[in-house]
Image 1 (cartoon, rainbow, N blue to C red):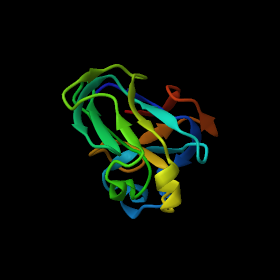
Image 2 (image 1 turned 180 degrees about the horizontal axis):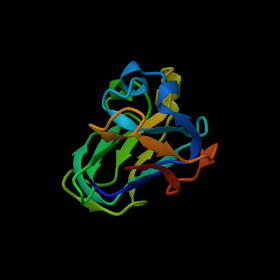
Image 3 (image 1 turned 60 degrees about the vertical axis):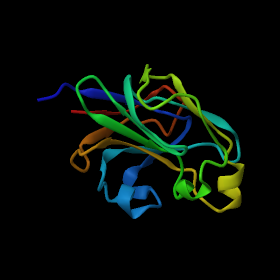
Image 4 (image 1 turned 180 degrees about the vertical axis):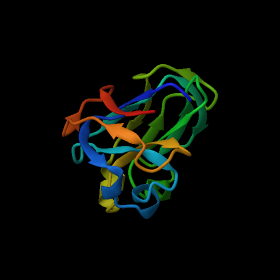
Length: 152
């Protein structure tokens, strides 16, 4: 059995259970268990890595970091933000980079996303895990880098 995994908030804001995310794939935990964070409306923010490890996928709106025991943690900034084709997203690291938990990975100006009517609720999931296997923090809100949930 893999050791317990602590996953930290990639952004500050309100903690949202995955079931309440306005996207059926994340709400149904089809890609994995976890939680989401909704940043304060209309304010630019940095996104930090939720775990230490290697960046195996880097898109303008999402990234996956594989932590040392081999589990991939997906951070998806906003819902439907892929349609923005990177508008408002500045990537700070490259695919293949090693990152520390809490290290800035991207900077986001949500103006274009908000103007397009997209939710900035940002799911953080451990890929290929059973639904409801994450234990969320009790906090109603988090600061980037705070513990968001544990798994295992």
